[in-house]
Image (cartoon, rainbow, N blue to C red; front, side, top):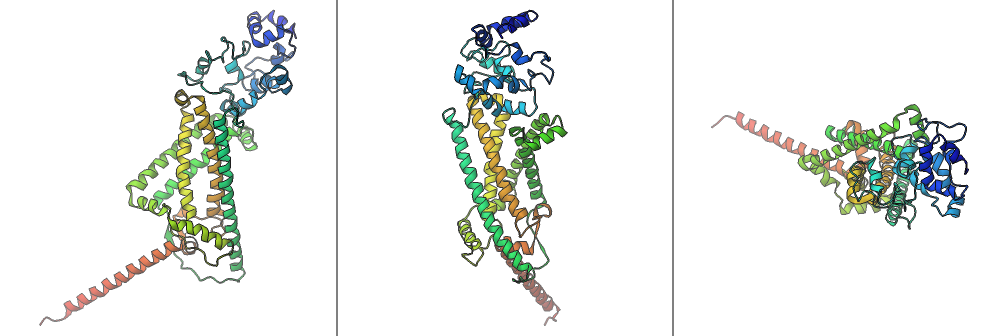
Length: 462
């Protein structure tokens, strides 16, 4: 190992001089045989150019194939006091995830630390020293300021001592996800069992139900269905393209990349387009609920009332068999109200943190890298919570609910049948029928008065 550097320097003289001044070169000069030399990184007989995708020092390979074996070695870390989690924290960062996803135009280990001129961060000449770190980041992030590099670069969010803020965010969100989704799953399981038993009894003639009128009731106008469609489509695209980045090695992401080579580069653009669509749809919805009569009524009907708390308790009693009476739900039940306001909150959080990451240069100049890491952590956990909530809560009630299976088609047709209204919104149905009966009575009264007036007109005047 001590001779290899001199042999390579015969042809690569300038590189040899630079390497000799680096941390690795100095370690070799001191007789540290585990320190990497030229062949450690470039190979021996099968040396390839750095721009060859098969080369170990290619942009897509250098972090995993060259730096990892030494900097993830527990033996070397214990022997020489170097950190063994550097590659793990890099892999969990945006740069590491993007590299794992096949992107080569993002930072790898060599982008920041250098290749032949690697020096410890304590050395003023090092690219990652406090004096030079902003300039190093600025090569890829034009306009990087003094606050840009504030905060730890290699952050272990799973360690409470490494970065407590990120650990607490994860701790709180994991508890929130487990509690919320677990509660939803338990609620839906009780609902499913109760409704499935009822459907079984109906099909086997054990329970008779009155025939329902063959009529439909308006649930969603065309304008509301378009808002829902834009939101649903953009949300699904955001989930797919977002988790493509977070889990680049998962089977479905690998399948997409194998079918579409540039999928990862396109993922970034598609994700941002979907984010803009969701934001615009949300802004239009805000206009709708403020400036239209139906929109204002929508918010009034979606606002929580004391009855909703009673309905939760009464529904649990009914599903558990503790009460024979099913609570009568109005136009929007506690189920839909909880989902709507959770959607409002989630949209605000996801849009805020998402645009913070999109405008990373400006955001980090204001709040530093820790601010960026906080936004990124919240964005990730909120995405998991929102996705699971849609699957467990929303998809159940509109697809897997025995009363709606195979699907509640109101999102497409805008209407519900009389039977669906009886099961899901009986109070609203009663109000509609009462209003129709009142209108019919008023029409009949008006017709009678009109007939009396005509009869009076036909009588001969004295």
